[in-house]
Image (tube, rainbow, N blue to C red; front, side, top):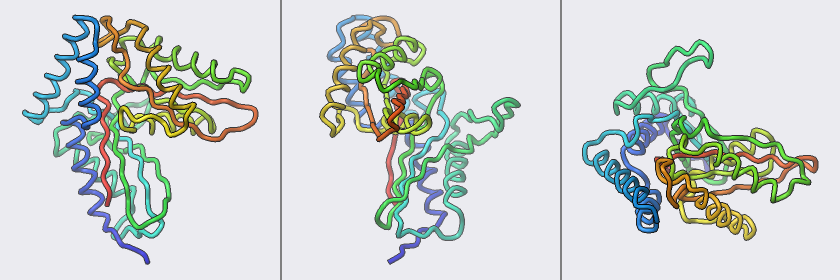
Length: 281
């Protein structure tokens, strides 16, 4: 049986998500920062982590953004095949929600109409939307605004199959080392392995929305996540890039089947303000 969802309900939901996610970190990120503060070995690193948590506290109490870069709106939208969106297009509804959220929430508008001409759209639209059709009669929206201080530090590596898992490890470490302090550590490292050039990048971006502390269900991937986190945290970059034992809070890896001739790897880095929120309609 087909279930009808009005476009206005989607707009209302996305508007609320835009505002909330820019003022409050998710519980998993908040807990990860608290745990990092307890475990940090450097006095300066611990002090910086304390300051980051104080910033989060003030942002929530005073309803001001937790970062001045309120990001480009990225959404993963799972649409149940038994859903019909009424009174408008789903994409228009989502973009209207983003427009309302960023304007009404007094959030910084960071999107330009053209990558070369660079005239600001003044409402942070259009969003970057990744759709998937799933079973059921609901729409699940994962919203993850992405600031570009860390986005600019991301990389895609088109490895050869012979490079194997060691090549993957080297790619991850290269991306994180090159990013250094520029990604506002402690960072979350999203990794996509497999698929094609564009698929591995989407896998990496989606990996950033996974709950911190929850490893992959695939045994070798879970072990790789743990190994990479440990190695990254021995680099000495530390909180704020000023040294310490907490360079990353998590390494989340997603995989996908790929071609016999390829081994694509994407590393999408996010700063300590790894914003993500999920709603179901």
